[in-house]
Length: 271
Image 1 (spheres, one colour):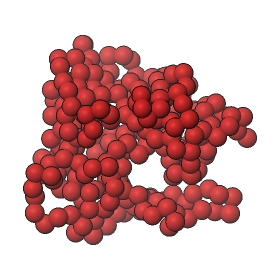
Image 2: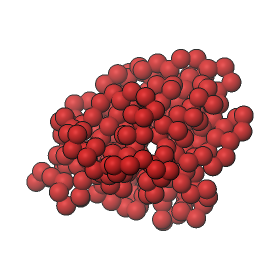
Image 3: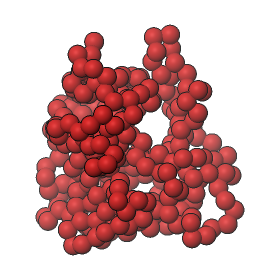
């Protein structure tokens, strides 16, 4: 049972910060392939987002990088929520034009999702939600989240037939819908996000759990599929450096979760 009051139901993920091995290479990927507009850049970092006042992605250069290990705790993927199937299809087409490989495509019942990795191997999901009224729940309130093959051809049929300048950037309203983490111990991580922060558990899979604010399917995913009992990535490896949450009910002190992920909280005016 949760020992914390439910977290602000209007919570959103305002931004993430990633440490990358080759800043020019990663900046090119996120701007040209994924389609995030560049806001600012110098030799140490880069900012991206449709609103220059509200960056959604910060990249920081690692001085002496070492390879990413898939078995460390840390980032499984950052999930970019698109406002419509047409917007998602446009991003898929942009990635295909760039020749960047896709790694999977799934129908999760609550959403349609495509998977890929950035140049450092940090995971990315691009997705769109199905209408919330269509999400299936069990009598105890748990969401029914499935993994079935996605009908990619039907999805791509929603994209505009002609490529124009607008197709080179993500659609307005695209942002971070959730962050999925690799953890050492799923029950321990659930207890932190549920009991300390007040997220509500929405669904479970073998060695995985999904938590959210306000009845969303998940703002935070947790799994130990590759990372059971592991420790966090070293500072020299590409990694997730920070998740920045936006709350309507005011700021909170920054925290570090049991797997070493930094979490910060701000109001929309200061995000």
